[in-house]
Length: 391
Image (cartoon, rainbow, N blue to C red; front, side):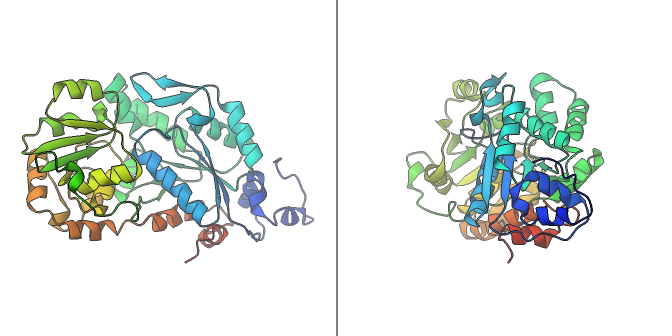
């Protein structure tokens, strides 16, 4: 994987007959030559500090992305905390911080010889992968999933301006930073981020479907459901304090669980759920409640809609992009969360919810991810063809 030092005698073109043989060859995409003929799919590294067993939208997004890419005949190698010795993040034990990852990250990339490197998070693994790419002058892409600046301010009182300064520095050297919604692009542009491309989120429309509602029949209805991390930045207490009839069901784990469970004894805490069991909780609910003001998208909202369940949320980034233009039967946004919950229940329309969710296709989102890998001399069609994803 050494840098190309060849002269103009055509050796470059010969060495690039199959782009998939190394990241070093992809580096040469920044130079001017004929596009190579790639067969057999792409090899893609995804470096992420967020991974299973965490239950959150970032993990499900990256997991689903890899599955779909693999289904189309590509090869995906994740670099995750599971590959390293790690310690829990102070005050947030579910997040693992990998220890001294630089050398092992370099070995993984060298051994795998990917065609593209995507860095999904700004933690130790993301920084190790970024360091490797910068030292070798390999192109890489990043994505903006988490409002780290707001989280750090909420948890440790770090000024938000400091947090965004750190994030800008992290993302500035990538080919592009992928962002979930146009509204977030606009916001980050105001914060002086550059080189952004849209990477929409999708939902697994085969996994999340309307179904049997009996699972939660043992609880007084209506059932208002929350799915996600139990952490202060999610504003879960806004939901738990709301004066609502019926039952509040909480799916997920997090640093706030013990505190919330002790304080709100009438709520039902069931822990983390995955796969078909998670789908069953969505299916059995009457309204899905999303109290967070800090998420960049909120994939759980689309999963609930796909199961025929309306959403109640604040009118903030994420819900605004998901529910914009949707029939009222799909959900309600209001600064009064109690009002939003009650209105969403009164106007619920399971068929409209499912129909609206079908606008969020994971296959389309994955194609968008692939086209965002474009580098000079290698355009969108080249990447789609290489990933076997030409329509």
